[in-house]
Amino acid sequence: MIDEATGVEALLQGTALAGRPVERAAYVGPDWAPRPPVADDPVLFVRCEPDEIASAWRAARSVVDRTGRWPVVTAGWAEGRPLEAELFDRVGRVADLPAPLADDELDERLGARFAQRDSFRFDHDDRLRYELDVTARSFGSAPSLAEVGRSLGPDPGRDTLDRWLFGWEQALVDGGAAGGLVDDTYLKWFVPARQPCCVVLMPTATGWEAGALLDFYGASHLDGWLTVLVSLLRRWQERWGAEIVASFGTMLELAVSSPPTEPQDLIDLAVEQCLLASCTTLLPGIHLRQHARVLAGRSTWFLHERP
Image 1: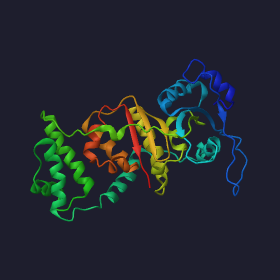
Image 2: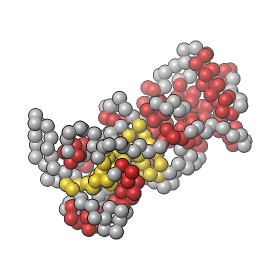
Image 3: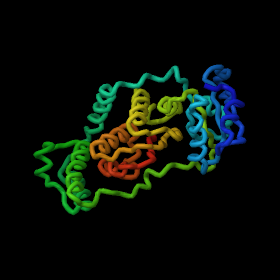
Image 4: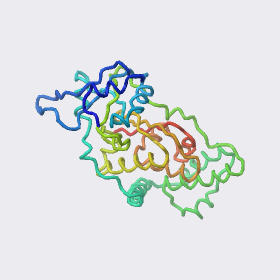
């Protein structure tokens, strides 16, 4: 890993970031908690404009094998504080990251969270009929209350019903029916406005580690959920070629080289994303099964979780 700014600058020649200075974060910090810069794991970054997020990231990504530093785009949010001071506070240390979970352990942790979320119950048939009406409006037909009851019992959880309806609808799709798609603008990448932006050159060449080094609310508001973030980022990179591009505190943006297309993979991925970042679908009012279909073959992902 290259720790000197001049060495990284030389490697960026011939890219979209050529000629831009590579800066090293110098800690300023609040008066009540001063501390000197950390000698190891230095925070290096290159400033960029908000509309350069994709091109600036690709430029730094193209030389990861030589810099040993994975790029993640972020923005400064602390009014009145220098960007470099904020970065020093927000970038974690690789040595402090938890180890990723094995697949079976990760699935167990996600299953427990799914069950917790699924404790929401339909307290009367009108709520259940609404969910079935969503399917009917999209596909022209829907299962009956009796069919749902036979499959899921009289009181299914919301997410359990949503996942089951995905399978019911998929049978129609497999038979040639059209439907189930929604406007995908809710997954459009966020572009900061009036905030300073930069490409942070993380002190690791591993993408899933780099994605967990900047603060993300989806991993910080639940105890032990940083481990889930690390584990999911590794799983998504290994399975789908999903690489972290940007982290904005409450939002993650990823570029995906081999996105899933098979129905079971899609619904599993949709569940994983919603468990990590439920605001992705809750705020725009998107159903789990709709989100799964939007993800089919999609080369960019957007995750959102906020207080």
